[in-house]
Length: 145
Image (cartoon, rainbow, N blue to C red; front, top):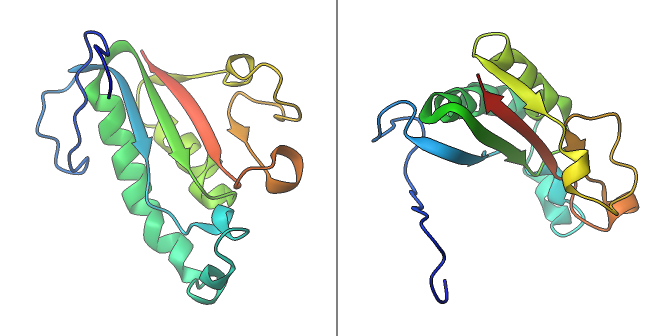
């Protein structure tokens, strides 16, 4: 960081064992561990290290991290859920499942990325190598209610 970044506090910690009180943050970013299938264009050898059961192995951790992130946000706060996977089991399925149990509503991400084409139906986005020139990254924004 250079200069004065403003009145921000960045906390890096194990999200499965929060060291903070619920409702402590205005914004929370959850960049979850995942299969990394979205980065195969840069790391093609990773395809040989992954098995179908890896998806199921990450799911409980991803759901737990998103749940704790929502609890860490104050009412009205925003949580970003990001992963470098295009697989629905690591993206929409995680978000949809957590939303069934936690008090939050999706925010449409698409207007926040003007000029980026083909972002889908929303409110979340999935970026693709062949459309966006990026890894296959996923982002959902949720406002705690």
